[in-house]
Image (cartoon, rainbow, N blue to C red; front, top):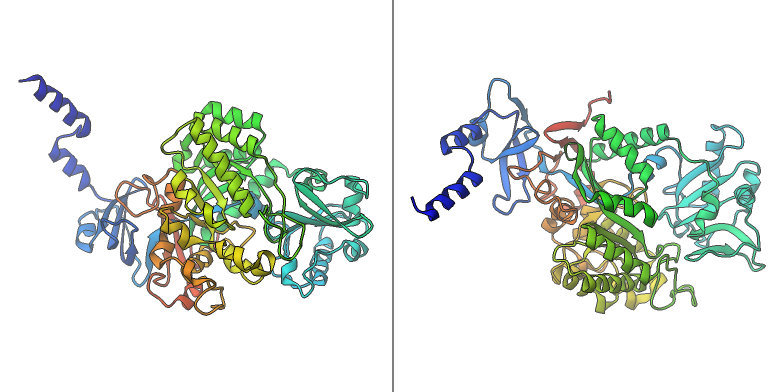
Length: 565
């Protein structure tokens, strides 16, 4: 035998360690689960649709026709007949806040309030249920939804609750509204200076009115007693259950501190973490260095946690006029927003991330912030050339025309949220004018350059229901199908693109495309089951669709109509 034959034999032994007959026998072993009867959209180009799936050991082993799946049914195989239902790969929200959702489920819900008076009513009702003097927290107010769209002042809230400190986070998480008692506890007065990257809204005399924007929020929030570890566990479990109910099998967690990650690991070790979470670390540089020393951690606890990503914020939000703009806001001359970080620091973190195999994801909403982040990424990549870094810009909402092609050119992923477009479209033109708004939520322009766009909701800023952003991506219409034909319809995606934006593209954006994102043999058996065919029904029926089942690793973690245990 020649040396060439020996090398070939060794190579074949490595690639195919078992004889063909044995491998074929393993492939024919009975499945743990066989699913039939449903319309299956695989998001796998080699087989876009199927009629049956087989699962073994938590992973897909067969996707195809009914006959092939039936051949894998054994005496102990579980069988699901989902006739009339639709299966897609497990839906993933590419930008959310798990702990924020857990907290929102335990605080005053201000989403949908239509006036300042309604906020006071909800807070007063909540105060009747808590001990006197205990901090009251709430989230979800948006002055743009009120008849008077100006920021509120604390006077009426302080009169209603003079002795109880109140801290109410704006819907976007980039501003807070507090009463006089909270300002008193924090020592806020006319003499208090605005912090870097933050702003205290003041009256004509310079007195703080109770609204704190971006980095100014910490002046008061740091006085709120920390949530206990037991409470964090309860909030996390409640948030995961809510996501499962909405059909989500995974998420990208946009900024978690070390304590939060520790709680996640505790739950995952105990088998209580029914979610695949791509965690973005939010921490001081010293803590980041500690995580980087460990190196990327992928698929911990049976694929429940990936810890290989970092989150930084470069500016604020459009709704609170904290997004950093190249030119002043159209409805507030002289205000160009807020930068919460600087180019030098962004570049230094990017360089560290590249050297240590970590992904860097930076929040940027305004066109000035987006340009600054792209510049910092480009400088870091020039210093540390890396072919597959998959750096991300979170939101990428307002882009200057010149910066749109830079994403694909630099290999940067714009992580965007369909529901932000349908929430902001009513007032976005007033805020930034008719020209800049053409670069807002520019999905089609980015896709045309070769970029991919993982879709999300930014929950609890928006509802965690993934069908809202799915619907928005290909219609650019709200839940009432307004405006007819879509807001700037030239930026719509296809329906197929919308499905990829919440399955395969989030998988790619988290380095998980070999594990999730499509219904493909070898990948985790993660599925979302809907009662309607979201790929063919009329667009106006999408938001009527119900989640029938959420499946992770071949196990149902949610079933419609089945009581919680």
